[in-house]
Image 1 (cartoon, helix red, strand yellow):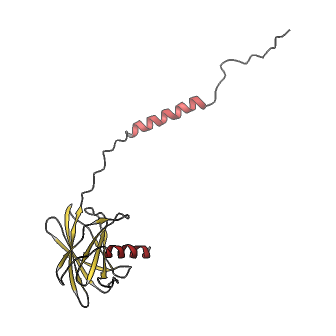
Image 2 (cartoon, rainbow, N blue to C red; image 1 turned 90 degrees about the vertical axis):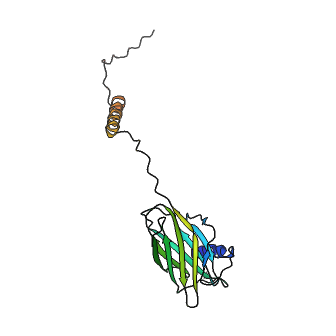
Image 3 (tube, rainbow, N blue to C red; image 1 turned 180 degrees about the vertical axis):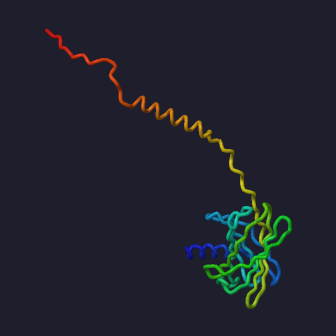
Length: 191
């Protein structure tokens, strides 16, 4: 699993090229959906590249989001970073969220619960021992949950009545039967 994730991550890094200057916000690549249902975005700076990975977000639902950071020249994971992700809601309210180191080298994660539907701007500030980078990713769309369809189930009393009629019918059809007339002995009439 880890090897597959690292292979996908490496391929994503190899397909992105961007010119950048230190300390500026570098634009992210176009969001791309993955087979796992997550969405990924790529951004490259002067020293490092960042892959932002997130699930479908819904208002009021907490989700885990990830930032994978590698050295731009060697493609090695970068550890020991301080990462602050700024999520700006459609009304302009900012939430500054620190990302903590994840399970894999170069992986950082944070949780986020959107309040309102709409487009959320995403910026990430990365501070390492010898560099500072800032990335701006494409906005994330947060959709209001789809209301469930009206309950078209029949009323309970109708279900109970139907069940009782089915049981009564089964008893009448398959239950014990009475003979309505007495059996007449069979007489053989032959020559």
